Image (cartoon, rainbow, N blue to C red; front, top):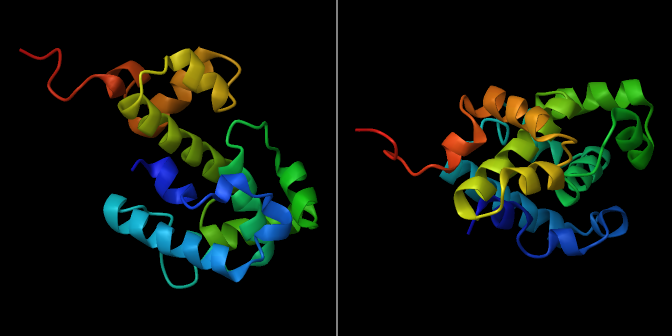
Length: 168
């Protein structure tokens, strides 16, 4: 099971995030899944320090809706304003609360989520870099490549290459 399936497992993407996200069972399942992902991947944003991190953010109904939107449609051209509107907050208050709860800015979180998905798809599928970049919201493959290199420290093509390939 890849990161995508682990995080959104149990059909989270199949539900409309606004009315159903308040369902306690769905949230409980997501929290359990995120704990599993944290243990398996050592994810720094799941729990950073007491009161900060993804698990704590999911306890905040408005931030949970925003995170669900990002996870449900990672290729959508999200803006801070649109996410703030979705959760019924001003842009400033939303940005401050998101950073306070998650430990990073909204746009940094979105980029990290996209790059995580990209890494999984590159190593787990045969999808081309151009297909992956387009489905994750990047207008050009070069913009995607720059973001990928900043996040992973190497190019998408190097990420796809099996360990030890190309070395003598």
